[in-house]
Image 1 (tube, rainbow, N blue to C red):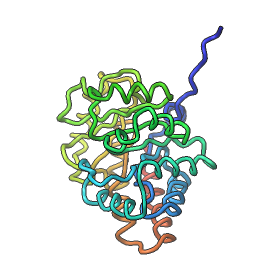
Image 2 (tube, rainbow, N blue to C red):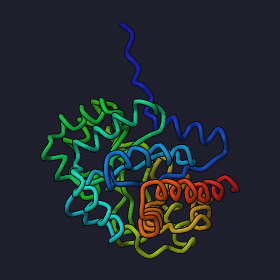
Image 3 (tube, rainbow, N blue to C red):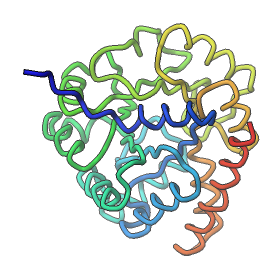
Length: 274
């Protein structure tokens, strides 16, 4: 009997496409149900229409220890609107009704995963159309049980690489894939920006250690900085800068969605000019 082939992960398909096109990945982050389900779903589609290649979707959590003030506020807004891990899965399922190609990675913390159960989570996530997960407070060395369930369901865990982590903390193993998330500086999301020299050095140190694409996030606050970063990596992740700009200056849903489209368009143009 012929061996069944796994369906290619959307993340791998995306990187293959971008490589063939000679383009770099532009990634953004939002917290599910911030500030409510209707706007959150509209925002996801606006991201894609404006040029985002991959979406990191946070599932609301009360203690987002890796995140700075901007994303902490986004988590609070989402929690106040009734958001949680199960609701985030439902949001992705709704998104998949009309978008079956854009990769989505859940990003959050281990407590909700433990509460749901790794087997139930991985099965529900795969059914919803999620491609992978980042568990910010779970080192790979402690993630064997979760990785087994992710691998069983065709999902991947995206490893984080920071200056404080040893290479064994993001080594390849079943259930790990997608890309390597390079954090060039120590500190929370939305913190100080790293110099391009620091970013370049961090990416260069990672290249011999992984066959995965390397994306850089944390502290990327302008289209120019994103382009400089993408020039030395495989793409850039922009999160807090967008969320802060959109939610601090736009009082209603229509203006927020328009602001996302305008700002993401600026980042996309900067990366495509490389």
